[in-house]
Image 1: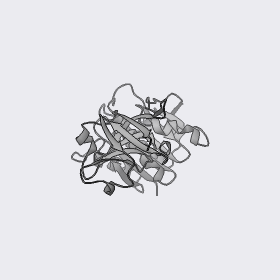
Image 2: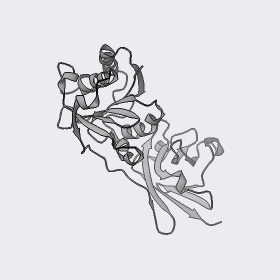
Image 3: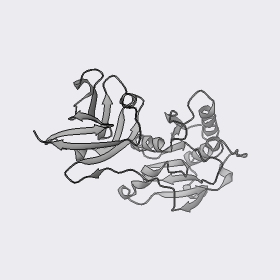
Length: 265
């Protein structure tokens, strides 16, 4: 039973997600369809990339992941399919697959990337506004039915890769990072690895001129409404507010600088 996941910025108030599912099941009725999320903020390619990186490792090998966060739909951007040793990915060539491609050194061999340029695996009529229905969904279904990646298009090596912000160790032992993701609860997920925050010494975290002392073991370790620093489920530094939204409280979001430094005593 092939598994196909769907990640979009469509929301659920319109029929777009259901239409894509209908196309897939019409070609591959045995497919198991999984909604990863349809609540990516409109056109937020970076957030979709983060969700893919966080979620896809937990799926069985061979899972097909379809992503439709596609502000350039109908334009010059290419439709892609990517095969890694563990999964297949289908979507626009706009950088949404950056985390997948940057993990190349972890793979036994480089991912295979094809430009989807074989219309016989698309719907007969292709719109300028809904490639999720007309290209990505049917291609996913044909892959699930056993069509080879090479049959779907021309191999390329120049897929778009976004400039990914990286944390940096500063003179004096401080660490400069930034918020890279805000979840539904308003938790601010940063790019500072937990491994860079050893328990020796006392850490202080600064964001928007607010200082947070130390890492908390859990959300309940501070009073209601207090800001806290904690290790996220992705093993990075997270800034949160107990029973509140750190993003709203601090008036910030992705891209906000965060500094970590140790103090004596």
